[in-house]
Length: 210
Image 1: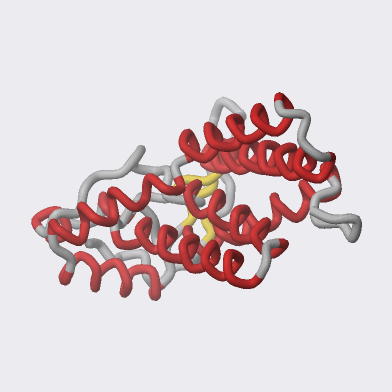
Image 2: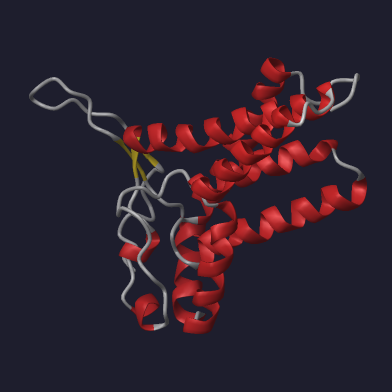
């Protein structure tokens, strides 16, 4: 895994090509990102990677958007209470936004995935994930941040369960070297922001009930 850019700044300014089009902004990993990725590449094994690969499906955009659509359809077909419909509207809007925004950001930012910077890691079972320059931000983490934020309206036990699950699944993206640690942290924060903004549109979480 190359570390030639560890001493450089994280952000590379946008440049303009000869045709006048703005090129993507290059996001560089931090020293901590490199350190964590090196450790995983050295110590992982195929069993760990297979388990992480299975668990990471819990935050796949197709899975979560599909569940949100089913929940919305169920709530509206059954003529559920206004509170239940509000929850289903909120989860659907949040899921669609969390699925769309990372794709837009990946068109603006370029960052090489850590799994493309290692040979040792692949000998230890680490797979290739997605397109090489789509590390930033982690789309899975965006969904997980939004889910964890929405769960703050739940009673203590299920809320904590969702938080633990969200954190655990987010870690799989790092273990798989699909993303740098900073990609996952930024994605999680973006997801929280999406969910909080969506509340202004759906009325979710207001004093009148979720």
